[in-house]
Image (cartoon, rainbow, N blue to C red):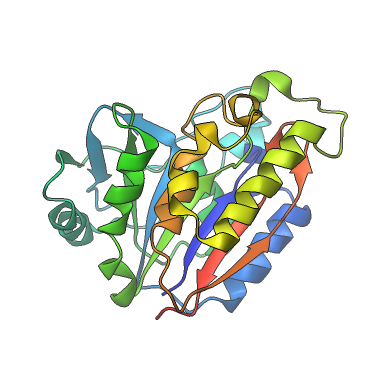
Length: 256
Protein backbone atom coordinates (compact mmCIF):
# COMPACT_ATOMS: atom_id res chain seq x y z
CA UNK A 1 0.00 0.00 0.00
CA UNK A 2 1.33 3.50 -0.72
CA UNK A 3 1.95 6.04 2.03
CA UNK A 4 1.03 9.70 1.72
CA UNK A 5 1.80 13.02 3.37
CA UNK A 6 -0.68 15.80 2.73
CA UNK A 7 -0.02 19.49 3.24
CA UNK A 8 -3.44 20.34 4.63
CA UNK A 9 -3.19 24.12 5.00
CA UNK A 10 -6.40 25.95 5.88
CA UNK A 11 -9.33 23.88 7.20
CA UNK A 12 -11.36 25.45 4.39
CA UNK A 13 -9.51 23.24 1.90
CA UNK A 14 -11.74 20.41 3.13
CA UNK A 15 -14.84 22.00 1.61
CA UNK A 16 -13.61 24.50 -1.00
CA UNK A 17 -13.25 23.37 -4.60
CA UNK A 18 -9.79 24.84 -5.02
CA UNK A 19 -6.56 23.63 -6.64
CA UNK A 20 -5.38 21.82 -3.51
CA UNK A 21 -8.70 20.06 -2.99
CA UNK A 22 -8.67 18.93 -6.62
CA UNK A 23 -5.01 17.89 -6.52
CA UNK A 24 -5.52 15.63 -3.51
CA UNK A 25 -8.67 14.11 -4.95
CA UNK A 26 -6.89 13.32 -8.23
CA UNK A 27 -4.07 11.55 -6.38
CA UNK A 28 -6.52 9.65 -4.16
CA UNK A 29 -8.41 8.43 -7.22
CA UNK A 30 -5.24 6.70 -8.42
CA UNK A 31 -4.48 4.91 -5.16
CA UNK A 32 -5.49 1.31 -4.51
CA UNK A 33 -8.41 1.13 -2.12
CA UNK A 34 -7.09 0.69 1.44
CA UNK A 35 -8.60 -1.67 3.99
CA UNK A 36 -8.12 1.04 6.61
CA UNK A 37 -6.35 4.36 7.15
CA UNK A 38 -3.88 5.17 9.89
CA UNK A 39 -3.68 8.95 10.11
CA UNK A 40 -1.00 10.96 11.91
CA UNK A 41 -2.24 14.53 12.25
CA UNK A 42 -0.54 17.70 13.39
CA UNK A 43 -3.62 18.41 15.49
CA UNK A 44 -3.42 15.62 18.04
CA UNK A 45 -0.57 16.23 20.47
CA UNK A 46 -0.30 14.25 23.69
CA UNK A 47 2.18 13.36 26.42
CA UNK A 48 2.95 9.79 25.51
CA UNK A 49 1.38 8.00 22.56
CA UNK A 50 -2.33 7.43 22.06
CA UNK A 51 -4.32 5.61 19.43
CA UNK A 52 -8.01 6.10 18.75
CA UNK A 53 -9.95 2.96 19.65
CA UNK A 54 -13.54 4.10 19.17
CA UNK A 55 -15.89 2.18 16.92
CA UNK A 56 -17.61 5.44 15.96
CA UNK A 57 -15.15 8.34 16.31
CA UNK A 58 -16.78 11.75 16.42
CA UNK A 59 -15.89 14.59 14.06
CA UNK A 60 -13.90 17.14 16.07
CA UNK A 61 -14.13 20.78 15.00
CA UNK A 62 -10.92 21.97 16.62
CA UNK A 63 -10.79 25.48 15.13
CA UNK A 64 -12.59 28.80 15.37
CA UNK A 65 -13.44 31.78 13.25
CA UNK A 66 -14.49 29.82 10.17
CA UNK A 67 -17.84 29.72 8.35
CA UNK A 68 -20.68 27.65 9.78
CA UNK A 69 -20.51 25.34 6.76
CA UNK A 70 -17.20 24.00 8.07
CA UNK A 71 -18.59 23.37 11.54
CA UNK A 72 -21.49 21.51 9.97
CA UNK A 73 -19.20 18.91 8.39
CA UNK A 74 -19.47 15.39 9.75
CA UNK A 75 -17.15 12.60 8.68
CA UNK A 76 -18.88 9.41 9.88
CA UNK A 77 -16.13 6.86 9.19
CA UNK A 78 -16.04 3.93 11.57
CA UNK A 79 -13.05 3.22 13.76
CA UNK A 80 -11.16 -0.05 14.03
CA UNK A 81 -10.31 -1.05 17.62
CA UNK A 82 -8.71 -4.29 16.43
CA UNK A 83 -6.34 -2.35 14.17
CA UNK A 84 -5.66 0.05 17.04
CA UNK A 85 -4.55 -2.89 19.19
CA UNK A 86 -2.34 -4.24 16.39
CA UNK A 87 -0.70 -0.84 16.06
CA UNK A 88 -0.08 -0.79 19.80
CA UNK A 89 1.58 -4.19 19.48
CA UNK A 90 3.89 -2.88 16.76
CA UNK A 91 4.85 -0.06 19.15
CA UNK A 92 5.04 -2.30 22.20
CA UNK A 93 8.39 -0.96 23.40
CA UNK A 94 6.93 2.54 23.67
CA UNK A 95 4.35 3.86 26.11
CA UNK A 96 1.07 3.55 24.18
CA UNK A 97 -2.50 4.03 25.37
CA UNK A 98 -5.68 3.15 23.49
CA UNK A 99 -8.19 6.01 23.65
CA UNK A 100 -11.83 4.91 23.23
CA UNK A 101 -13.16 8.48 23.46
CA UNK A 102 -11.02 10.49 21.07
CA UNK A 103 -12.55 11.44 17.72
CA UNK A 104 -10.98 12.57 14.44
CA UNK A 105 -9.56 16.10 14.33
CA UNK A 106 -9.70 18.35 11.29
CA UNK A 107 -6.16 17.46 10.24
CA UNK A 108 -7.46 13.93 9.76
CA UNK A 109 -11.02 14.29 8.48
CA UNK A 110 -10.10 17.40 6.49
CA UNK A 111 -7.99 15.33 4.10
CA UNK A 112 -9.99 12.10 4.27
CA UNK A 113 -13.21 13.90 3.36
CA UNK A 114 -11.52 14.75 0.06
CA UNK A 115 -9.84 11.40 -0.48
CA UNK A 116 -12.72 9.16 0.60
CA UNK A 117 -15.89 11.29 0.62
CA UNK A 118 -18.17 8.31 1.30
CA UNK A 119 -16.44 7.78 4.68
CA UNK A 120 -16.60 4.04 4.02
CA UNK A 121 -13.05 3.14 5.09
CA UNK A 122 -12.19 2.56 8.78
CA UNK A 123 -9.93 5.22 10.29
CA UNK A 124 -7.53 5.07 13.24
CA UNK A 125 -5.53 8.08 14.39
CA UNK A 126 -2.13 8.08 16.10
CA UNK A 127 -1.11 10.99 18.30
CA UNK A 128 2.16 12.93 18.39
CA UNK A 129 4.11 12.52 21.62
CA UNK A 130 5.19 16.03 22.59
CA UNK A 131 7.82 14.75 25.02
CA UNK A 132 9.97 13.17 22.27
CA UNK A 133 12.34 14.63 19.64
CA UNK A 134 11.86 14.24 15.87
CA UNK A 135 14.38 11.40 15.70
CA UNK A 136 12.21 9.40 18.12
CA UNK A 137 9.17 9.89 15.91
CA UNK A 138 11.08 8.69 12.85
CA UNK A 139 12.31 5.55 14.62
CA UNK A 140 8.84 4.88 16.01
CA UNK A 141 7.25 5.27 12.59
CA UNK A 142 9.53 2.63 11.06
CA UNK A 143 7.81 0.06 13.26
CA UNK A 144 4.55 0.75 11.44
CA UNK A 145 5.91 -0.45 8.08
CA UNK A 146 4.24 -3.91 8.25
CA UNK A 147 0.86 -2.20 8.09
CA UNK A 148 1.47 -1.33 4.44
CA UNK A 149 1.52 -5.02 3.52
CA UNK A 150 -1.82 -5.42 5.32
CA UNK A 151 -3.52 -2.85 3.09
CA UNK A 152 -3.40 0.03 5.59
CA UNK A 153 -2.81 3.49 4.13
CA UNK A 154 -0.47 5.47 6.39
CA UNK A 155 -1.38 9.13 5.94
CA UNK A 156 0.40 12.09 7.49
CA UNK A 157 -1.35 15.45 7.65
CA UNK A 158 0.59 18.63 8.36
CA UNK A 159 2.72 21.18 6.49
CA UNK A 160 6.44 21.33 5.68
CA UNK A 161 6.36 25.09 6.22
CA UNK A 162 3.87 26.29 8.82
CA UNK A 163 4.27 29.65 10.53
CA UNK A 164 0.95 31.25 11.37
CA UNK A 165 2.61 34.34 12.84
CA UNK A 166 4.12 35.20 9.44
CA UNK A 167 1.05 34.58 7.27
CA UNK A 168 0.17 37.21 4.67
CA UNK A 169 -3.36 36.41 3.47
CA UNK A 170 -2.92 38.68 0.47
CA UNK A 171 0.22 36.96 -0.77
CA UNK A 172 -0.42 34.14 -3.31
CA UNK A 173 3.07 32.66 -3.03
CA UNK A 174 5.68 32.03 -0.36
CA UNK A 175 8.30 34.25 1.19
CA UNK A 176 11.78 33.54 -0.14
CA UNK A 177 12.86 31.85 3.09
CA UNK A 178 9.79 29.60 3.05
CA UNK A 179 10.37 28.53 -0.54
CA UNK A 180 14.06 27.84 0.16
CA UNK A 181 13.29 25.65 3.16
CA UNK A 182 10.56 23.79 1.29
CA UNK A 183 12.93 23.13 -1.60
CA UNK A 184 15.68 21.96 0.75
CA UNK A 185 13.32 19.47 2.37
CA UNK A 186 12.24 18.18 -1.05
CA UNK A 187 15.89 17.76 -2.06
CA UNK A 188 16.61 15.77 1.11
CA UNK A 189 13.53 13.63 0.57
CA UNK A 190 14.60 12.73 -2.95
CA UNK A 191 18.10 11.94 -1.67
CA UNK A 192 16.72 9.72 1.10
CA UNK A 193 18.62 11.76 3.68
CA UNK A 194 16.87 10.39 6.76
CA UNK A 195 19.35 11.82 9.26
CA UNK A 196 18.98 15.37 7.96
CA UNK A 197 15.19 15.18 7.85
CA UNK A 198 15.05 13.76 11.37
CA UNK A 199 17.07 16.78 12.48
CA UNK A 200 15.16 19.25 10.32
CA UNK A 201 15.63 22.05 12.88
CA UNK A 202 19.28 22.22 11.78
CA UNK A 203 18.61 21.73 8.08
CA UNK A 204 19.01 25.41 7.25
CA UNK A 205 19.21 28.81 8.89
CA UNK A 206 15.52 29.32 8.03
CA UNK A 207 14.24 26.22 9.84
CA UNK A 208 13.22 28.25 12.89
CA UNK A 209 10.99 30.38 10.65
CA UNK A 210 9.63 27.55 8.53
CA UNK A 211 8.78 25.21 11.39
CA UNK A 212 8.84 27.20 14.64
CA UNK A 213 7.01 24.33 16.36
CA UNK A 214 7.32 20.66 15.38
CA UNK A 215 3.75 19.40 15.15
CA UNK A 216 3.12 20.18 11.47
CA UNK A 217 6.47 18.77 10.32
CA UNK A 218 6.40 15.52 12.31
CA UNK A 219 3.63 13.81 10.26
CA UNK A 220 5.97 14.01 7.27
CA UNK A 221 8.53 11.92 9.16
CA UNK A 222 5.92 9.22 9.84
CA UNK A 223 5.40 8.85 6.10
CA UNK A 224 9.04 9.09 5.05
CA UNK A 225 9.90 6.38 7.57
CA UNK A 226 7.80 3.96 5.49
CA UNK A 227 10.04 4.35 2.45
CA UNK A 228 11.31 1.11 0.91
CA UNK A 229 14.03 0.80 -1.77
CA UNK A 230 11.45 0.06 -4.47
CA UNK A 231 9.25 3.04 -3.62
CA UNK A 232 8.91 5.94 -6.02
CA UNK A 233 8.68 9.40 -4.49
CA UNK A 234 6.48 12.05 -6.09
CA UNK A 235 5.24 15.47 -5.06
CA UNK A 236 1.86 17.06 -5.66
CA UNK A 237 0.14 20.31 -4.62
CA UNK A 238 3.72 21.57 -4.64
CA UNK A 239 3.20 25.21 -3.78
CA UNK A 240 3.95 27.64 -0.95
CA UNK A 241 1.17 30.12 -0.25
CA UNK A 242 0.26 33.04 2.02
CA UNK A 243 3.93 33.62 2.62
CA UNK A 244 4.51 30.94 5.21
CA UNK A 245 2.42 27.82 4.45
CA UNK A 246 3.68 25.01 2.23
CA UNK A 247 1.05 22.82 0.62
CA UNK A 248 3.69 20.44 -0.78
CA UNK A 249 2.52 16.85 -0.43
CA UNK A 250 4.41 13.59 -0.86
CA UNK A 251 3.40 10.18 -2.20
CA UNK A 252 5.40 6.97 -1.69
CA UNK A 253 4.21 4.27 -4.07
CA UNK A 254 5.48 1.13 -5.65
CA UNK A 255 6.43 -0.77 -2.53
CA UNK A 256 3.50 -3.11 -2.19
